[in-house]
Length: 285
Image 1 (cartoon, rainbow, N blue to C red):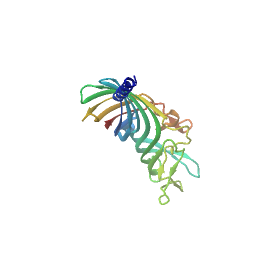
Image 2 (image 1 turned 45 degrees about the vertical axis):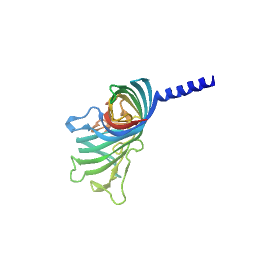
Image 3 (image 1 turned 135 degrees about the horizontal axis):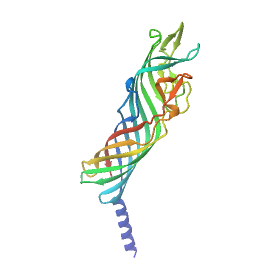
Image 4 (image 1 turned 180 degrees about the vertical axis):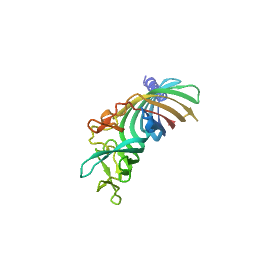
């Protein structure tokens, strides 16, 4: 009887080991925001690159299919370009005010998420698998970097600005920026010299901050496939389509126009969603 029980236990462990596996996956992301833009201002979102890496657990369902549960650190975002009418919020001792002019902005947005995909995989041949599923993500590090050029309509020879952009969407405050001790950019307002930060923060143009620009979570659907070079090593391609508006109205403002009634920024009510694809290499143990 003891021998029978021992054989059954060994058989159960072997069968359990054959029905599940673990793995790792890493690679590059190419993503952008899907949202409305102002064509007349050459406003556009385009693909930006990032990376992902993580571990996964695979539970066999049939001899040709299994469920995969993953934990990934992934960088997704977008390039943002704007070249058209805009404004610049000037702060100085004589009083704060908006100056109108032409604004050119080039910005790389890189939002890091802790992503939790769940996908169903089906083995078409010994070499090829197809998969589809859903994912949820928790935003852990929303950042951006780029440049801003502004030329005043009324005072083009005295108010012209070139700034670097160093954005921390989660921690920056209204009017925040940094200036190295050896560099003090400045403009002239009347007879006054106004110094500006060399690096503008994410909310430097805001009179006040009423919350962060990006929501703390994202969710969507995915579809893709993998090619196995051998039993465990594979290359994969996955497309991700976000279903959640990732920007918050309270923290997202228009760069082109102001509210004429009170000269305040206009908060955008548009939906911006993540879209992109992943190119991966992985190993299933």
